[in-house]
Image 1 (cartoon, rainbow, N blue to C red):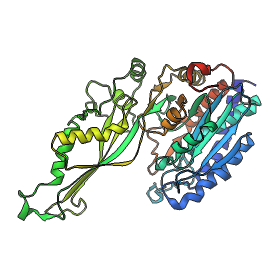
Image 2: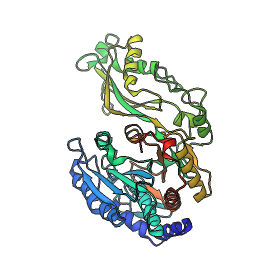
Image 3: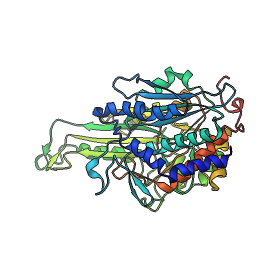
Length: 469
C-alpha cells in the first residue's frame, strides 16, 4: 500500500484504454444544457452513468431537483469513513454547450471520441467530463490500493454550468449541512501551459450588461435628414470612448481593481501567458503599468462584445433610430459587482449621456480569491510538485469565471482548483479536445493529491476554516 503503487494503478487504467472507454461513454450522452429538449439526458448522465460508478466505490448517491423551475438536477454523492478524518468537497458539471455538430471538421463527431495523435476530440472532453473523470478515477485508484481513502468525500455534480449555474447558489445555501467540509478541491478550466501543472484558488467575476440609445422610431433617409438628425451609433461610440481609452485603460470611476497584495503580485510574477496556438498578445493594451499576466489575473477588464446600429447585414442609406452595445466586465476580488452599473450610470450622466439606457444581462458571478500563502494552497502545491517533478503555475484566481463564489462565500470553504485542460482546447467551440499527455500526467497528479489527503499530513481545521468542528 504505497503512493507509488496507487499511481501505477492509475497509469495502468490509462494505458489499457479504460480511461478512454469510460470517457467515451460519458461523451456519448448529449447533455447540452442550453437545449431544453436534452433535459432527460441530464438525468440519464447522473442516474445511469455517474451514480453506478460511484456506488461501486462506496458512495451514497442522491439526485436532487433544482430549486429553480425547469433548471437541471443535482447529484450529491457522499462517502463517510470517520468523524475524525478530514472531509473534502469536490465538484463537476455534467452538462456541455451545444454540439454544433455540422461545424466540426470532417471526420469528427462531437459525441464520439476521435483520437488524432495527442488530441482526443469530443464535446465535453475538456469541459468538463474529461476533468471529473480524471478525478474520480484517481479516487478509485487510491481506494483500491489503500483499501480506504483516509478521508471523507462529498461530491456535487450540477447540470447547468453552461447556462450560468441556475439554482446552484440556492441549492447549496439551503443544504449547507450536506457540504460541511475542510477543503474544496475540483477541476475545471485550463492550465496556463499544457505541459505544466496549474492550480488556481478562485476566479474573476463576470457581469454582462447592455447599453441602448433609442432616439426615435424608424430610420430616416440620410440624404433628406443627414445633418439634421443625431446618429445614435455615433453618440454611443463616443460614450464608450469615455469609458475606456484607446489603449484599454478603464476610465469609469469605481471600475478599477483594488491594488494587488504582495503575495498575489509575487505569484503572478512567476506566470507567463500566451501560447503558440493563440493570438499574439497586444502588450500595450490594458491598464498601464501592469504586465500582461497582471492584466489577466490581477485586475478588472471591460469588453464590448457586440455593437449594432442599423442593419449590419443589409445596410441602407438611412440614419438608424437605435444603437445597442452588449458589454461585460471581468473583475477580481475586492470589486463590488452591485456597484458596477450604478457607477457607469453616474459616469454617463456626468458626461451628458443620460439618454443611454443600461440593462443587466443575467446575474453577476462574484469574484473570489484564496491567498497563495494559505495553508491548503501550499499543501496542494507541494503535493503536485512532488508527483510531477515540476514547478506548479500558481494563479491566485482564474482569468475567466466559475461559480466558485458559491463554494468560497456561501459554503465558506478554502477552494483549490487543479485544471486538466489547456487554453487551445476549443471548449465551447467546434473541435473541442483534450491532450492525452496532459490527462496522463493529471491522473498521476490527482492520485498523489488524494493519497496525500488520506495520509494524515494536512493543515488543521482550526488554522484555515471558520467552520465549527
